[in-house]
Image 1 (cartoon, rainbow, N blue to C red):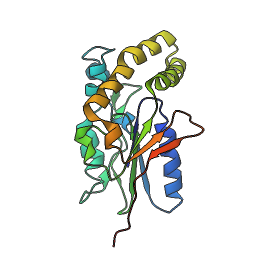
Image 2 (cartoon, rainbow, N blue to C red; image 1 turned 30 degrees about the vertical axis):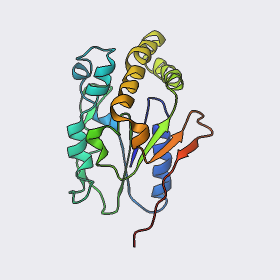
Image 3 (cartoon, rainbow, N blue to C red; image 1 turned 180 degrees about the horizontal axis):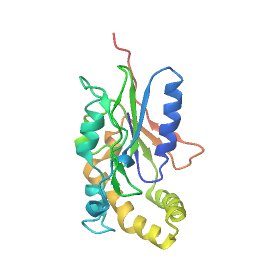
Image 4 (cartoon, one colour; image 1 turned 90 degrees about the vertical axis):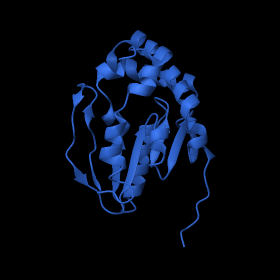
Length: 203
């Protein structure tokens, strides 16, 4: 299951809540964040530190995400997976040890750009959190300014890199049409389901 959406859309909170609910049903949940599959800074910023193209094209190590998570946990996979391959804060590789998932384990991943074409076929269920980009920027700037201690830098990143990068993602990947479930998460206290598919039991 993929939980997709813009920066600060509420992806991690929703994923953690779903993981807790699914675990209560006595199903193993493999909880992974795409943030642990970033590329090194020199690659992420090779098109410029404020480049929206670089943000969309160069942020994540998709071969590692596919080889270490999506294929092993997919049909006929080995079920041997890694939780992470990179430490974003330290900007260095950090390959987690291999783990073994049970046969009926559920992969629950949150992240940006998860509905891009090269990943789409791996998901059984996809959720996209809809938040207008102004709201995403306001939340993200407040969060990141606290983390990096520089509101001007956080604002520049959102205005020049992150928000235009999300717009590029929508033009290229069209996640609003690709997602199985759409949730308006503009109000974190009152999310609203926009689209929810009908599921039929297998016979």
